[in-house]
Image (cartoon, rainbow, N blue to C red; front, side):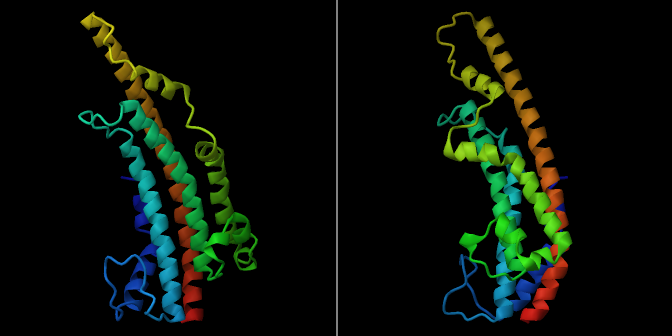
Length: 245
């Protein structure tokens, strides 16, 4: 069973989705619309439920992509010639490492929405959220948010390097990249080519297996922390609903 499935069944998510259906049952919106049309006036309750639902769904979506990213490490189509096996692997590893930190941003936006802090999206960051007096007065949530942030900090430097400096550097991955630069045109001995391909394939399989295990453990720990936060956010969500309703 995927480590993500626990998040998908969280009571907080199910409650928000149910509230959203009820709050907007009388409003006709195109199912393909990316946002609520400007000519529709929302009550504060509808606005609140919509905001929480928006960031909650997008947080879940981002987590689902982290789960999917593990499978994408080994879904290379050898019939396609637009990228090498090494290029495909490097792209998916870097994509995972960049995306994992982005979940943090969505978590902070979700906390902003649940507490109805109304902080502008562009100004939401870890410091602003954990220093907010409303969040601080819910010590269990405050502690949970800080725990998630601490976990993400372990991966932040890698992400920063990828975005601002250079591609992911890994000795074993570099070996794979060099392996796949060889087209064997200079080797006449078929047995040598066969042996070379076996070594290359074996190295690739072991590397992918190790990465899948590593990313699965990261996801499992992360999703557990997020699931715990969702459980803590539900009572606050219910409390804020009564205030805005």
